[in-house]
Amino acid sequence: MPSPETRAARVDGDRAATQDAGNGAGPTAAPVNGAYGVGQPNGVLPGDQRTADDVEAGIVALWRGYGQSRDHAVRDRLVLHYAPLVKYVAGRVGTGLPAHVDVADLIQSGIFGLVDAIEKFEPERGLKFETYAMQRIRGAILDDLRSQDWVPRSVRSRARDVERALERLGARLQRTPTDTELASELSIGLGELRDLYAQLQLTSVVALDELIAAGRGTASLAETLPDDYAEDPVASLVDQDSRRQLADAIAQLAERDRIVVTLYYFENLTLAEIGKVLGVTESRVCQLHTRAVLRLRTKLAEQSEL
Image 1 (tube, rainbow, N blue to C red):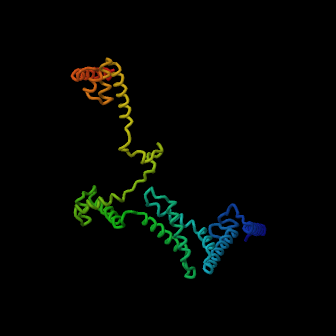
Image 2 (image 1 turned 90 degrees about the vertical axis):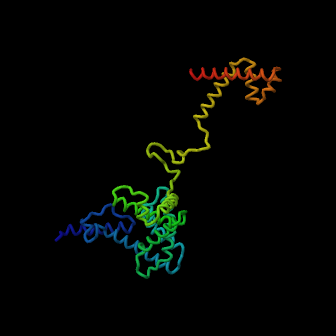
Image 3 (image 1 turned 120 degrees about the horizontal axis):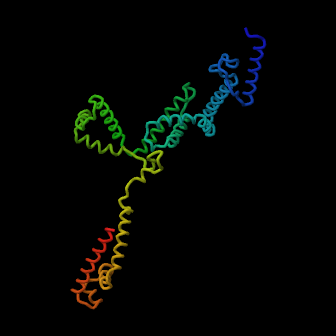
């Protein structure tokens, strides 16, 4: 039997806990099987129990008030109280989704499901709201995902059938099955299976802004895709270097040869027009052009060997 001093200590402790709960402050620790935890589950203090009861009573009062007035302000208070349910359900649903699906978007869809659950819930039936709301939240999230999916549901269903058939055949054959074996497992023809492959290509989605080579850089997948219309920097440098070498080689030609090359290749004059400019015959211009080209080839070859 506890001594009078022990009983006095327990009474003082209970009184202090009650005073803290009344002031809105909770105790910092709850000893398990200690003086404050006798008769309470998991060492819950009497003040904590009364606080939980007060919260529960407040929620019951909110439900009663919302059922009578259908006031949006009261509904919003209920939404704030049950908002953690949305985050929990969104996290569970998002576990099996691709990486490009943002959990924040799922939470936004789930909030609408929570509001709908609050508006349609009937407390007088005695059902637990959390169980009912989680189903409505999950349904709202899935409905929003389906509305954004451009792939028909029949194709999604066929994709799951193919995945299950591949798993069954792989486990039975202990190797990767062939297309013929897979078509036989699905009871379809080989041509129909290949058509199905073409449809299933639409179900593969990759986020272009997703970072690659995690830990080694911040490049995104979009930055690794080739641009067929972009200028090749290597080819551009080679072209610039070739132009520089050609200009140097032309500058080393004789004056008449340089004039012929300039007028023919840069001014687009014919051999006859160049002959009139130089005051010579067209055949002579042809000879000058041939000599200039041969000299240019020789000089470019010499530069490439350096």
